[in-house]
Length: 68
Image (cartoon, rainbow, N blue to C red; front, top):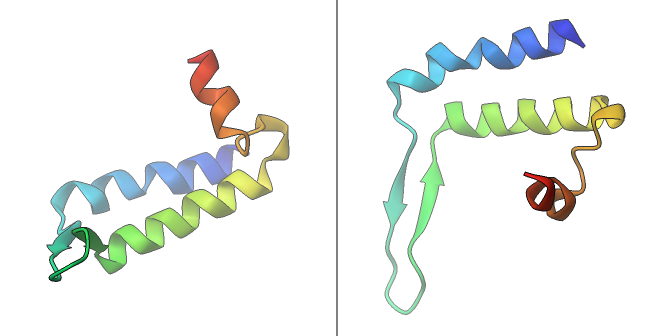
């Protein structure tokens, strides 16, 4: 698990400089953020970490938030 955590921590420098995304506005729709490729790759890496570490029980978001 230490290697996976190191991989996630390596994103710190990449995410510090941006760009992170841009707001998209369309008439009749709510605004949304179109994330940059860097952010999309980070999200994918976090999801892989989450599913590769079932012992951390990171899938139950409501329980995590209620305990925090």
